[in-house]
Image (cartoon, rainbow, N blue to C red; front, side, top):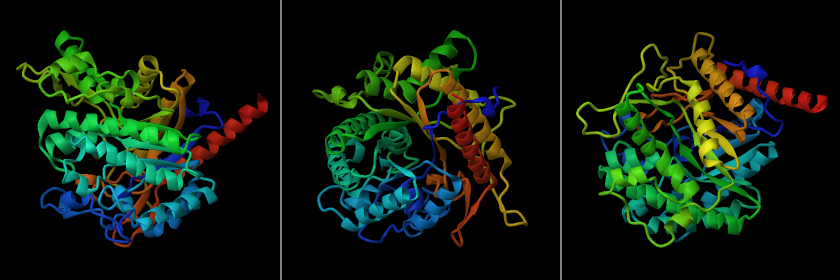
Length: 458
């Protein structure tokens, strides 16, 4: 594997960190914020470990200046965060909560005053509960509500925010949220509900893009997809076929829709009894050109055929002698290289940002009060090396955002899994930069110095 020091990142390459509103903000009942599906889900017994919720989280709502100071210390170029839809429109549509917009005004200004570019995600899973009560992402009207919400936010912040992401990981919203019921909103509607939720989300993405184009024509806008490279467990025909179907569910269903305006034919046939109703110019709306594709990637999938033949998508395989994170995800940095090459080759996006990449490990504070996390440092070294190789190979990479700036509320895991490069002492909300924080700061400094040297010599 090529050493990271040999990779040439251009001077305008964006180094950032990411969070999401429900995971860090807290202040769930303050300043007019409405109820979200994650508030309802977290307060449903048995849904979240230890009955935990994002009611306080990292208290970023009150401590954002402290967190921006951490970003300055890191030397970040950009910060990716999400807007809490119910903080802006408590009922999902209608009356605007000005205090919610005021908070994001303050956050954006604080970032810009610190020389940090805001990358704003409009939807990171916290749908207003009022809209879920009307059918949520299985109701086409939610796409129109999203467009109206987008207009409110972009009208307020569009004079300063130059990068917008419509949706984060519609796959996760649809499959764990609407098909399996293990994440909010907790529905177990199976394939039909998942596919309908995906279609409405992608329709919302397209409608949101139209709004951004009109309200902030100079801005860059796109969507973030969680993409997972899928490998067959062997070269056997059945394994290869199952891996292809799994890739269709995980990746092609979204990429084909966004970039080609069609869902993949083999998946349409596989799911023919569950395909959502596609109306009029839906696919034209979904596939309107984007300025960039955001990719979230943490691991890979390995698939073998189901010997019973019942599950055409096959069965997951846990590779032997592999390294795994605290969430059980395999550490496989070559996967992100293969994924980026494949996306470049097959879909040709104008620009790609790695909008999330990172790892959870069971971090603890040592006797010196510090947090030593060598596994995460190694993970980040390996993955940034792989994206560097992809960049050198012609992939139009423009930036990288580590997940996450802070330990935070990790959805159904509660506060059990720690992804942050900053440790949160949850009893006091003290922020403690980990060894990985120090590594990332040094890494960014070295990359910027190397880019300047290359420009000087060139």
